[in-house]
Structure formats: C-alpha cells, structure tokens
Image (cartoon, rainbow, N blue to C red; front, side):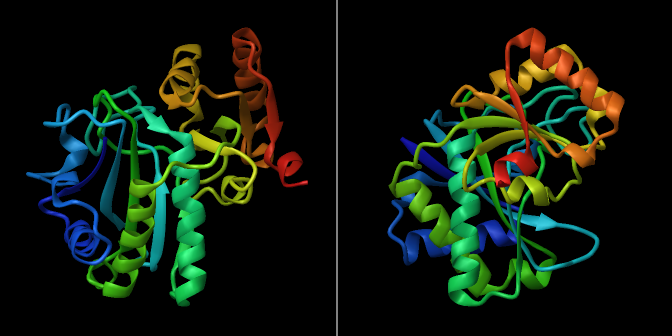
Length: 255
C-alpha cells in the first residue's frame, strides 16, 4: 500500500490533494490529511510501503520552485524531528519524483525552477520511507492551481506505478539546492544528501545512518567535489573506506 499525506495547515498540500482525488483518481482512502504539521510527527495512523508528502515549500526568496527531498536532521532539530536523526527514504521514488517534476515543468511551460534539495527538516522517526514533493516558495505559488496540478500529476504517477531501477546512492557536499546532484539523477538515484553546511556532522555514525536510512541499500556515495574542502572530503572518504563503500564525483557521473 502507498499513501499520499498532507498537513491540515498546508495550503499547497490541500490543493494538491484535491486534484489527486478529483482529477487523477487516487482513492480518497489513500490520500490522508494529517492534523497539524507532518514535520512534527513521530507516529502516523498508517504503515505504507512508501509515503509521498504533498507539501508547500517555503523560502525567503519567494522564488517559484518545484522541489523534492528526503527528510532528517544532521544537526539540531529546528523544524521537527529529532536532532541527529534521519528519516527512512526511498532513493528510487525520489529520483522519479525529480525527473517527473522536470518533465511536467517543461510540458506545461511553468515559470518554476525544479530542484532536488538536500536532506532537511522532520519528520525523522516514522517506520516507513518518506519522500516530500513540494510547490513553493510562497503563498502565491501555494495557491497556483497550475503548479499544484503538475505536482499532483507527479504524485499520482508515483502512486500508481513503480519507479525504474537505478543505482542507489548517498550524497555529500554542495549547497542546499543541489544543482550538481540534480544533474546526475538520470543515472543515479540519490537518497540522503549532506550539504556542505552539514558536513561538520559527518561522523561515522551519521554516514552509516545515511546508508541505513536510504532504500534500496546504497551502492556508492556521490560527491559534489568542489562543494567541499579537502580535509572534509578526506574525512568522509576514510569513513566510506571503512564501510566498504565506493565513491564517485558528480562530474564523473555526468561524463
């Protein structure tokens, strides 16, 4: 069973959910409104094989953006979840969500950026894989029916079909909006991504958690090579070597 969830206080989530049920035929019983904000939940009344969260994306820039990402806190829990905990995610669904968002943005000529974001915010404690699909970055976009319909179409396809196979990976480096990881998604399914701002938390336990909380089990790590300092790269590579995990640069995968 798959579930699409949205927060009761989320305008974009409500708009997406309405289109999912009314236009794309996702059964009402599989589209679940959660009271309050899903970011703050450590339990939900369902246990699906995967949960897609239809959500707003918020940023100070207010730039129109369609995004998707895994959730978790490498450091402090500033927006839900538990500090130092990552939520289970599925890299294949995350890959498919990003590729479909790109397709729909082009198909409908939406004046939106499309971005794969690094891992951030809660929840962190749910016992099933979670992927966020978001419309942002402000009230105008949350109420943009064209953008919400495109996101709904993406989520409907995620709900109704299985994602294609691809090598599963974890990622390190680069900024919050992960342009170099976005460019390798055609070839690699990247689950949890630790940005350059979070590498201070790159302990062995945290890297191991990135591996264990990404489904399918990652085959490799991917580096935004120029998005990390030399000593940061070497420390992470030493941990990966201990774990027996190979790595590649995004530039090598792009070819």
